[in-house]
Image (cartoon, rainbow, N blue to C red; front, side):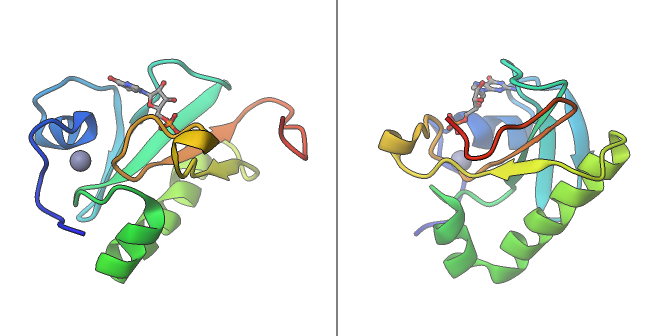
Length: 117
Ligand code: 5GP
Ligand code: ZN
């Protein structure tokens, strides 16, 4: 999996600052921003600066970036005032993945059913 920015990738454009987003945090490895169509009071997307199509591909290509992304999810939830949160990686079109640049959904601030629908 190549990790160079992909010209047509929406999230690479957000990383580059070419498309605006409501940024929540940035680190050496990650950018986090509010989902444009929030499904919970807190709904933040955490993405690697590196392009990888899904989180497993990211972990294979850069374990450091994948670990940094996971650590950042908790930091974001805590920063929003939540010590409980749901972390979701939709992986593959049939699972609802629509943007093929790895991203974790950090969801919190309402009851979260388990198992999910
Ligand atoms: P997926 O369905 O791939 O797991 O998640 C993609 C997410 O990206 C969706 O929740 C969708 O609302 C969000 N999204 C799509 N386009 C944009 C955008 O341009 N800006 C932001 N902030 N979120 C977006
Ligand atoms: Zn990308």
